[in-house]
Image 1: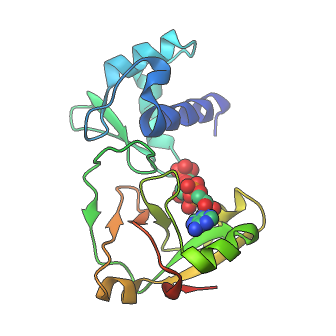
Image 2: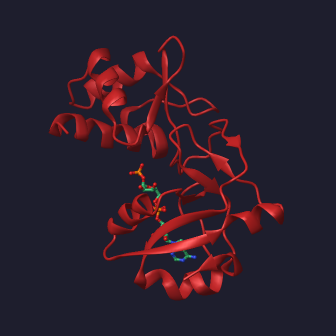
Length: 179
Ligand code: HQG
């Protein structure tokens, strides 16, 4: 990926998931930023960007992290927020098993407490073991945990799927995890 595009993608993640105030803008309750305000804010912050480049960043993003509204006047992150916004996630029946990528040093705590959402709004799970492996690799040698989502679902836990295909849940108790 073009270096500039990657840089802008990272900046967008910061602004749209965690802290819009870094460029002096606000998100609405559904996590939307006004595209016009965003472009002005990013330019003021010293990064040259126009609507076409923003479009390219959204289109080429490897994980489809961002989405425009219909008339492209607004933009938001599909998931991954620490900010408490309602991105209108769809509740869905999960596949029988989902995976979580982590690293060895967290396993003792995870065995005791299960998976917790930490700084984000949800625990992130994936359908593919490869994705879980990549997620874990961000922190070191990846460890892939399997989650018995069929049982969780039958016991009433709610699952959501983001627009870009990430499975989200409030927490995963240890009894549902295979180590
Ligand atoms: C671990 C990226 C101690 C958990 C990725 C993880 C993903 C615990 C870390 C998305 C724990 C949290 C999310 C417990 C979980 N005690 N550690 N009880 N429960 N953990 O970044 O899932 O590129 O908030 O295993 O690709 O790593 O940003 O979550 O290691 O999709 O779009 O605590 O972020 O996507 O880390 O990653 P994170 P995650 P983007």
